[in-house]
Amino acid sequence: MSYPLLDVFLTTVWVFLWILWFILLFRVIGDLFRDDSVSGWGKAGWCVFVVVLPFLGVFVYLIARGRGMGEREAKVALKAEADMKAFVRETAASGHAEELSKLVELKNHGDITAEEYERAKAKVLAA
Image (cartoon, rainbow, N blue to C red; front, side, top):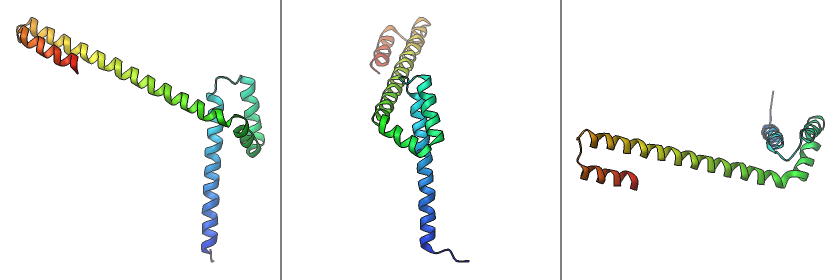
């Protein structure tokens, strides 16, 4: 049995096109369910359209709502970044509080002098 090189190439192209198609389909459905401005009925309508007539449904969705997909994706990314920064800030602040409380305990037990405490406290607060 022979399978010419051109047939191998065309089969590979078709496989990658199908993979691309499914990625596009999942992006459209994910964007649809992530969008809060569309009502439940609107989401149901788009889902029926995309499931019943997949190629036409996806292309119409991209034409009608494609510009907003990038904006919604950017908004989600900015919110995730802001949440991460807030988490880091809270974590870092709580870390300073722990270090300061340990320094206070060391000072109260007499393990470090008041001058050493002030220097260590300045280092912690500067970090």
